Length: 190
Image 1 (cartoon, helix red, strand yellow):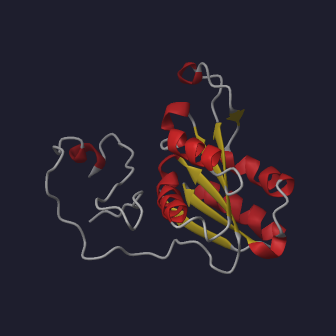
Image 2 (tube, helix red, strand yellow):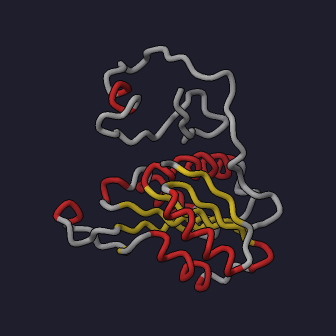
Image 3 (cartoon, rainbow, N blue to C red):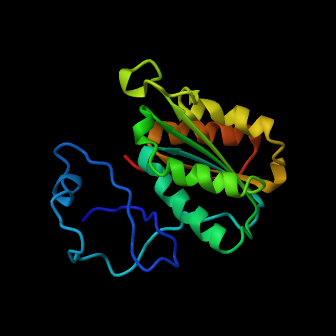
């Protein structure tokens, strides 16, 4: 049994997952051979509690690669409901720009709702040939959290920080949130 996070919103008629192919992986490799429309067995119910903190109005999402999936789900749901939960700052990091899945969707959502969503992608290996042409921010996503918190006027008593992705990034973001006295929520993808 393997666990994966949904990228689809609760209202979506189909389930959508963002799965990184892992060479030799027990499930990611075999999934590539499944034809569109094939039936698959899933657990009886979704599990977990990685949701928007209802006690605050401002939400800072920090993700590495496929860790963006739950945030996409949350943002799709929030957009359909008119953003009742407030303002969202999304920091999304990857080694290579092509790994910033949902980047176009998130940038479009931010452009359509600039008072509610800000999307801040970054690549950590800007000198690599695979990132040729990248003109956006560079550096590890966790290194950008303190600056994002400090420069956006987010009130300490009304902001929560969320991190999803690799454990090292989560530890680093947890430390920043702790120094700032902000509620912290996480889900590891290791």
